[in-house]
Length: 460
Image 1 (tube, rainbow, N blue to C red):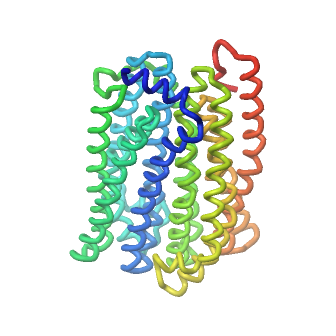
Image 2: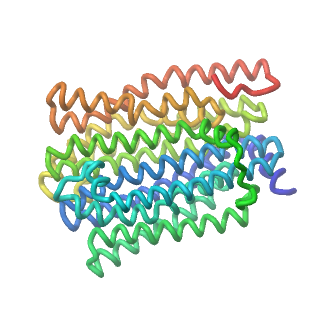
Image 3: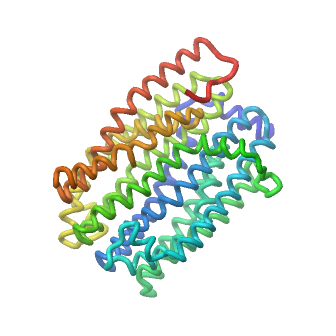
């Protein structure tokens, strides 16, 4: 049995729960590992001081910008490649992957050049105070240097997942994470290189991770990456953009919101910036469960929707939402109970502890509501219902969050409490708005099971 036949049987014959767990658990582990080494950065840099840790929050926003392009191209090419593999058009599938790969590297190089030239105003624009600025510049330089490799790594990672090879994607990410932890220890604790060493460690680990993922892709993927497969056809890039737009909005608005958050928090002091940095990174760690299992659903939904196995898509959506919500709820309860201890892992400054504990308790309550919105968004994206998916993507990090923080901080004068409550309130609003989309999609899939269509609908 060749790769194509084996992949088809896996996607349309394997029972839904074990299939999604097989694809989703490695992805979840990959994301947890990625967030663990972000948390390790936060821990090691936190030993250097409050201003130094504040820099990690500033650079978290820069990384979100890079990830916005990466996930747009990765999910956009992966969704279209999965569709064409389902239609046995391997050549066109390879064109999507190769075109996204080279475009992503080009975008990374452009961001690197302009980012380094305008490094100081860039860091200030992202919310750096004058005391944080030197450390943000040290860390930011290396984030920009590794940016092209981060973008193409995530494109490779996502396309491996869409081909059902989530375990290989996990290994590539895990290698980078392990190297980053080791590098942080050597460069910060042994060699005393400070924040500059943390940035250097991140860059080295991401570049090596890219080469590991590239090796796996060239050796095991059905599609191939080569410059000869790149096509200069506007319709292909439009298809990538449409399918990847929800990811671009999700991550792009996260970077904008991060800049807004940093700038609004900055007048409250470096301790406030450091506390919010710790809470945001930890919250992302918890949310990885919902996002990871949701990404395990994406290739299943995309392939089965293209082959008109609508019942499997519906079953996958229901199972993934229930499972991820249960696990995130458990982690949220633990976070609520042990909020102070969790913050103390990363910083023992008295003010950071006080502010961080309060912010984490607020966040823990709202995290329970995130899984349904994430899974619904990713499912709609996978079946190319881009308008609905894009709208839902824009809610949590933009349409709900940005008005909330301005109203709470400036309209109601709540200060740090307003900053800490803005994301939890945005999460609840996003859940309330996402719920009708979730129910409506399940109902629509059920109707499509009963009245199969010749061509699956791809847009509203």
